[in-house]
Image 1 (cartoon, rainbow, N blue to C red):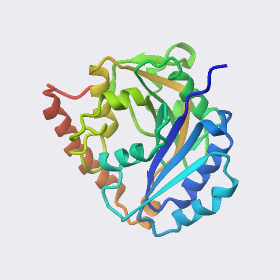
Image 2 (cartoon, rainbow, N blue to C red):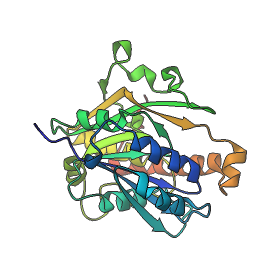
Image 3 (spheres, one colour):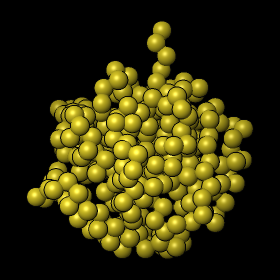
Amino acid sequence: MTEAPFVSVYVMTYNQRDKVVDLARDLADQDHPADRYEFVVLVDGSTDGTAEALDDLVGELPYRLVVLRREHEADYLCSKRRNECVAAADPGTDVFVHVDDIRVRPDFVRLHAEHHAAGDLKIVTGAQSTGEELNWDFEKCQRRHLAGPNGEARATHHWMAMWGCSYSYPRRLSDLLNDGEFDKPFDERMTDWGGHESEFAYRAYSAGAQLVYDPAVGVFHQDHTETRDAARGLDYDERVRAGSEKNMAYIVAKHGLAELDRW
């Protein structure tokens, strides 16, 4: 029997201890073989005990957990941090799955792995349900119109619709897009928040990779609130606005685009 692809799920986090612990436990309940995936967590100087809580979990997790401790950077969602997670992954990784501070269902890792089992160049993203309480309501996903009939997976040309809450790609694509200078494989000239995955997807699509939206590999992302973000020391709306404006302008200039992709 062919061995299942080895999957590295990775996340960058700051003062989101409870959410990351919940995600680690969700990943412990996966129906993908436990020896064929790992979880890489970059803890960006969190002061809420995130790293310590993850250390306490190690003994009860069936998979390999890698905790990267870093000094805090306000820019912790930048391309440099993504590349650090990729570099820290198991050398035998076949598939990378970038996530946010989210919740996932038991088939999450397996479904991402199955998309890449044939070895094609492909990026796969899924539905993102939102709200205050855990739910899997497909109607709450902003990208639901990208799905095929009856909510089936479908290829798309909309590279701007490729987001990191559920975003997978094979090592072969990562290696192809790594120029060893700035694109390693994410473009380290891009800082602040917003657009990193989309820029990666543009280069991937230009290199012949398929972009796929599959609602089945969906995630839940709790809504941001001023109170919750203030407790983390963040002005989320302002950070996203400023970062997105800068990074979108950079993408247009870098690739000589007349305008950004509209999905």
